[in-house]
Length: 220
Ligand SMILES: [Zn+2]
Figure (cartoon, protein in one colour):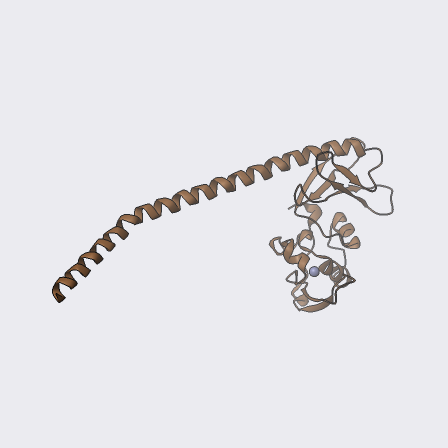
């Protein structure tokens, strides 16, 4: 795992189920979180499969876990990037890639799920109040920054991000192709099985007919 994503797992003292209200303004839902197990019953936790990350990975955290962690545990055991994420309650997406610019001191963090959803770009700042800046980027043919763009490096980064997207798109295509091949193979196997099975079925049917005929003869 990338060190940027690392958090300290809370001690077993925090192994208790706690109810928290939904953040959504149009929902009265109550969710149950457990800081030690790093679990939450909210839709984001299940939909983003956050339970599949290890307990010391900040990608495992939904907003509810972030808020409670910050309040009860504090941010001492969290990386610089993790602190920024928890402060802003920006839940993370699955994939992390890095890119860079000669104009920047630190690598740029590129965070996304797939090529048909928003991507987020995190740039570490040296003089700003916040330690990072986050930019939205929409993939697609031309690729576009959402609202604000990183001043002075927007076009350079756009090209680099588009390069990553091209790579990811190729991987997604390969994964679909592999799945297709696997499905085809399964179908061939299934057909082979039925055709191998057929003589047995026919044999049974013949025996059945003979028995019926014999039965008729015996009765007649
Ligand atoms: Zn949650």
